[in-house]
Length: 345
Image (tube, rainbow, N blue to C red; front, side, top):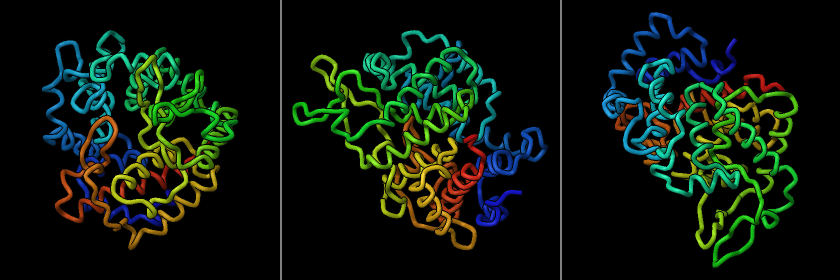
């Protein structure tokens, strides 16, 4: 019933992993109910972890978390981390934070400044797109602010389909590349938002998205391109959007973390079976499993240090090789599991 179990030794993973991986594997991969007594016990263990426990202490009376919006200890980073750790989306701290976030007041500029507004105005993914992605992390996609940004995210990917070359979307400016006026281009928040929502998924939109991802593969590696706003150069959130064509074993350190992050999102979107280059990448990933666990010695700090961009490690630390193996195996498991999930194409 779960073909990934033929590749990943799930019992061994569950034996060696902490509560977050234990909970998420049982709930997301094995489809166990969150109300199962064992999962309730694991949920309590997650909430008792110091890395999780500290966020409610940062929560203000109105539900806002921390002193920033776009920052590791602010509301965006907090909800991303709590969702990744497996905290149930109906937890009071998350619900109160999302209600505070819906207000969309000036706090959306905290930690990002006016560039967040500029990126929204140009359709390149600013504060409003980030906010929508945060709602997506918590599975809360029915709010109008999310639906609006989903349409913008789809437009960003649709714009990629007919791009003939990178030179067609950008031009040189003072030693940098800047987007040509009116160009739309997807950021990591476009990708995250679509990966964590389903309201937009029709055969037509999924076919378009697959064409866009195939084009991003063909255009890779993609250089860094800025937005020119008056005399200011603004960097869109191009994190993990630089190279859709390389295999994880062709990269090292930070680049491997980027590959895992992007490929998990693409798998959640159901893109892997419909993009030959991604099929090849994930096929090689599956082949790298030894004795049912992923033992490649990846150990870059970007896996372990959490923020609004980086961070994939759910174990308390990687001092033990067993915890590193558990974390990386879990990410492989997610990619393989979502690759097998019907995409709707």
